[in-house]
Length: 243
Length: 254
Image (cartoon, rainbow over all chains, first blue to last red; front, side, top):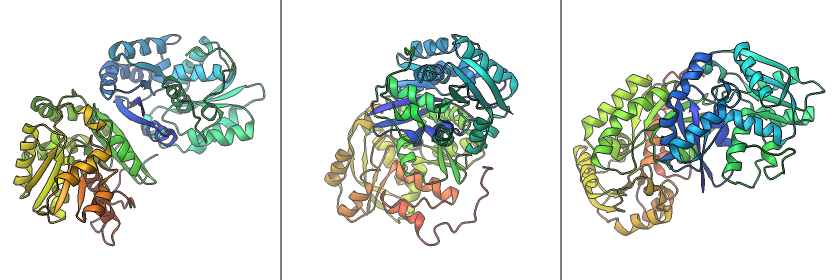
């Protein structure tokens, strides 16, 4: 039995159900929450105040890995910020840790995508920070579009068709992959269909977070139904893996 | 939004590894479980169990933000330890914070035994003596006599989850007496949900578990029939004709 510890923004209603549904046999999920009501920059910065306390709560359940399952809170201060957060979690708990943003960059390197289009639930301000984070990590963002959402609870009310439609709109021939960002946005149900129709990898932040957690705990079987990233868990990386 | 049929806000002791897993296992289409952890240590000392009352308020604030339809305080000893009035206080505090009805495991235990009309029951727990004595008192205050009490006698609450379902099955069978009308397996960290159904079939009397009783009250509070066929007679009651007969509550917005 392996255990994944997931730090969820308190107003996120999506990442917990989407993780549960995709968990392979023999892996259980344990959740702690970090305060977040709005996905504005101030609110997102505040979310990590509780990081050590909540991480210790998960560590007391002896989880094998701790995932900060939040996209914007882990890229907000740019290159290396996600690594800082990982270091804080690991120092507080002695457990291995990752963040959604770390997982996203690692997943893109894994599938060999260095030019992407970015679809997100955020407003332009947060989306611009997302774009800058990816570019600082060596990933060229050919186009970026957000849905302009600030109220996090409202993001959880969007249907997965909103992710599908945005991905179709922003895709272009020179994009090697499509990124769908925000763990409170229902993306998992759109991935398989988009990959089939567009013929390229679709990397969602929820999917990449689960992928990174499963790789850290050393799961070898793939998970079907959520794109090639999770299906081919044992596939060798197209590029040298950093995570 | 996930949980369009009902969202359960689940507060578990931070060391608990069983309850989230069991709640998700039985959640039907449209029901989602959103957890928060009650800060605390792994040893079930009186100080620790008393401390959960205060620590649960923080967890309730965290889970309130998903606008749950019901909140579950998922710890048996953490809700019976200081008696029925203390249990009610916990329940009222969490409802004031979350604006949702609260189910506590101790309250669900008393309610399921009362609903079954049981006056004499056998109990299986993982607890040490002081906690077992508090449990007897709590049930006595609800008019229920404990006939036999079998315990795994472990102070470390994290380790309660290491007790295999088969060991729980054997313990229940070993201690139960003909005088007892039913058996209750206490502690949301014990993996009892996997064996309650077979225990009922093999013993010919109702067998309840802490997680099962909590789920039963949560689904009742949400007016949802989850159609759970293999986790004991208590959860099957939710599927009986007229089970959801109470006035339908308004759900929080989906």
